[in-house]
Amino acid sequence: MALPAAGDPVVVVGGGLAGLAAARRLAEFGHDVLVLEATDRLGGKLRCAEVAGVTVDVGAEAMLNRRPEGVALAHAVGLELEHPAVATSRIWTRGALRPLPRSLMGVPLDLENLEASGVLSQAGLERVRREPSLPATVITDDVSVGDLVAARFGEEVVDQLVEPLLGGVYAGDARRLSARACVPQLVAFAERGSLLDQAGTIPTTYDVPVFAGIAGGMGTWPARLADATGVTVRTGTTVRELRRSPTGWSLAVGPTTTPEVIEASAVVVATPAAPAARLLSEVAPRASAALAGMEYASTAVVTFAFGVDDVAELDRLSASGFLVPPNEGRRIKASTFSFAKWEWVRSAGAAAGVAHLRTSLGRHGDELALQATDDELVAWSLADLADATGLRAAPVDVHVQRWGGGLPQYALGHVDMVADLRASLPPGLQVAGAAYDGVGIASVIGSAHVAASGLLGS
Ligand SMILES: Cc1cc2nc3c(=O)[nH]c(=O)nc-3n(C[C@H](O)[C@H](O)[C@H](O)COP(=O)(O)OP(=O)(O)OC[C@H]3O[C@@H](n4cnc5c(N)ncnc54)[C@H](O)[C@@H]3O)c2cc1C
Image (cartoon, rainbow, N blue to C red; front, side, top):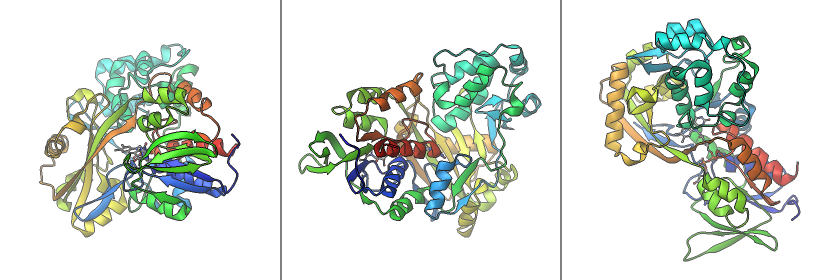
């Protein structure tokens, strides 16, 4: 099958950020692009909701600033970026909110700083001090993040630091997530020798801010992107089947009772792994089988609006929030003080006399976030917030957002699996999204560009 020529119709399945970014790239090359989105709104994991009359993010709320993909795409559609007003986070462990020591995904890089934080016991610190005496780590195939870090720094660093940081990004288990896929930099440094010895060369602080957000909410981005790109979008359109046809591909959409068939010369499947596996089952069985085995973590985000005076103590912490190690026996895994982190949230809230903050719950293998009632999620969040920060005021408003199957889990061998999967795709068919090259927004956009290049033959 020839590569699609400019003007040929291309269908993108899935109207999350990956699908929209792929659609934009293909439209820039002159294709007639149609985005089919199953739900009634674009954006997938990017979503805004009103809490106490103020529109805030209830899904992703930040992106990496030091990778170009996200910030460039937001700028390209005229969105105003903002950097966190406070860059430091805390860790709720050993009975206190402690400063998060300088680290690479939880791997400590500054002994003094680590000791001062009080995050580790004396025995844990002793174990860390031995790291420079260890030889370089030999990783033949792949290793879990937890096993890699435990071998160099001891189990306590994994439990107290790596788990909460990885939990914040993947909602996953450090001892099951692939180091090569999730923290390739860590693998590269460990293969060279001691991380503590190389700490001076490991960039954890940057001349430019690490994160960026969008004033008004990341959730405003998808619709803006679709409008600015000028592609055709159909929401409420689930793609149920993908087959080859004489002109390229045919997609069965809509209810089985009134089926509709859409023809395309090329297709990008930009859905999470499970629907992608179903769609690829006939046309790319090897890729389909690999995707069918991918596990996901479900999480929930509970957003609160409190009276401005009620959060004065939290404000004095000058922190963007705190993380909670899973072994602390708490229900929440993190809290983001949105009013302190984002100036736009503070000022929009202040105009309504409120301040917003959010908690997140749920990890891989723990369906708590899906099974609990809204009232339970709210009550658990308030109880943990009270214990961690002393905040006991009643919220003015609250919003619960569940993210069933929200975050893919990169198992050992993920990088090779994705390379093999991509190589097995027939010409004219590509995949994009969080299931492949990283779950963060910049990575997801990067995967969309890989997919578009795959179709364009560049
Ligand atoms: C709670 C939460 C917070 C996060 N916070 C951050 C953050 O702060 N920073 C960051 O960088 N990343 C964050 N992430 C990760 C990031 O938001 C996601 O990985 C990313 O947005 C996924 O984009 P995507 O396009 O790959 O998938 P999705 O957003 O899942 O989009 C896929 C789309 O495909 C549609 N679809 C599925 N099946 C079909 C079908 N058969 N036919 C048509 N359409 C279909 C879905 O309805 C959906 O709209 C967060 C994730 C979650 C869950």
